[in-house]
Length: 312
Image (cartoon, rainbow, N blue to C red; front, side):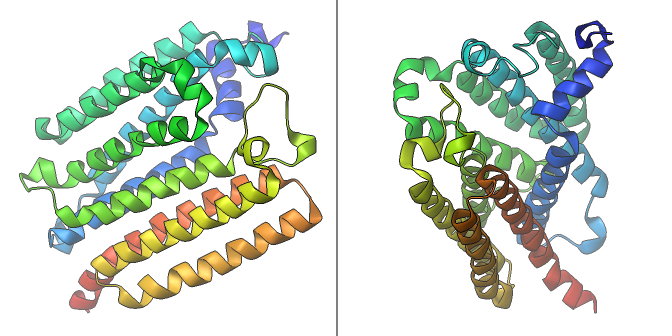
């Protein structure tokens, strides 16, 4: 049986395996949400027994759906280039249509609204903000030609969606309880923004034999060596931003030791990948995701250390 004749559920599963790995995105989204909610909770001095794990799960599902919706937007706006340069991808090869992906995204959007309403209508404006910015991203801010000629501006404009996602995650903690935004959350937002840059850079660095005509990568734009140096720099900045967030949360020892240890390990692995020239794409992608996951995990731990110490 041809894959186009499979049931929608199976075709959608194949699409996700190739373009939106559920376990990978699910784990990162869960860590992202736990980290943001825990940081907000700690900064407003919430009591340990009042922490809502159901709220964490609900927020994680909403954010996970948002990332899927962004993936669908990419499948639409990149369709012409994908058909020309990457015909093996699920949508260009006819596995699943853009209309089917869009219908699933809309249905999941209804679920998002229901879940957010269950957390309190005070959280709803933050979801709407994600929708609005996501729409602008899908339209490439109505300056598509200019953005595509300026890849760094393109990157930065699209990464700003993380600021709205950060606000939503933290608002699911403070807004639903009538509390106000804590200005110290800015450090978590910075750590999250740079972590997003790290993942985006990491997935678009390849060795020369892995490059494809018509597919833009940072290694093609800057060269492999320069792009790896850039990636190493962003890794350092992301861990420092995570360290400052931990310092704000009161975990001063972790704050200075974590960036040093994490960056040294990551840089060593990047150097080995460059020297051996062995599957640079996989190394940079996996390493950037691991560093980001570690950033979120260590921030979450730092947010709980003071309350755990008081409880002891």
